[in-house]
Length: 353
Image (cartoon, rainbow, N blue to C red; front, top):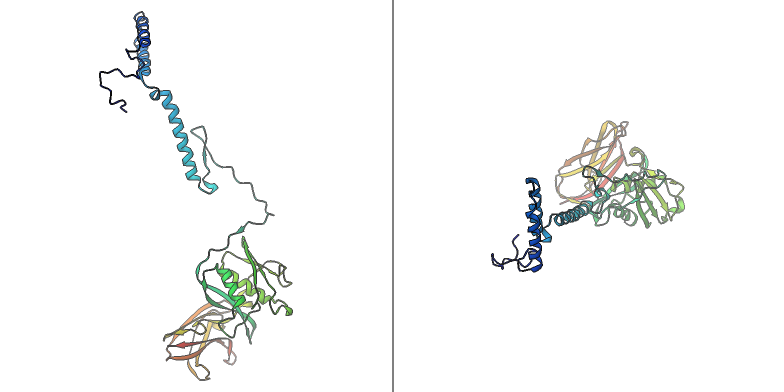
């Protein structure tokens, strides 16, 4: 780099330690010249002397030792900045270079967590918009009370909280469905590992006891909206009910879920023809039957059958039907192998525009 560009080429540099205008420099140069005249160095020694003289002529900031120190400082700052950039907020990036250039130190492994320690609570699911799944109860005359699912819009809460709030505070869309927890308050909800803990207020019907199906209504609703949860610890007013003293997993579907249930058209929906029907069920030889009646009438205006699941294994079913404008009731069921009567019927009322 050129410096002092305003100094004429033949003008002595005032910063040059061998400036001839400096008396001290002149005496020093004369002494050095006298000593040098008495020395007859070898070629190798001459080169070393010339290298020393060249070094003396350099400003202090261009001296090799100074440059080496500066380079080391710059490299150190650069390495530190790189470590900060790689480290970020996580511990995975804390890889430190050792003083030896051929070694890299990696962080020591974290101490093994004691298996007896409870897992750290995981954050609640992020609020999202979309649909949530809510389970209700219907009394099936052929198999007793069972769980049936409705799909509801999410207004922006986390899915589990939204589904539980709907189940506790809103009646089912289908008037045939009910809830053992209707009118109950959600006191607290948290997740630790694969276990969710839910603390509810006492339900209005608690005088008759909390049934196992009521517990499964909670478990199915939670696990339908958070797939990472495998079991639910239920508390009522801060204490575990007698029907669920430990964390509870989903019971087998065939034991608690409606054996035939319609998912579409939904209760009260307005649809276009042809009408698409869909649902989930299990039936003899996987045959799901359906019928359509005008609202309030007994005459069947359309009927058919489709395939679902069989032998206790649930499967989805679907079909379509052409209908004129009006309000209808659709029923899906299993036909009895003995006399053909409808079994495990689920129905929905809807309007064709």
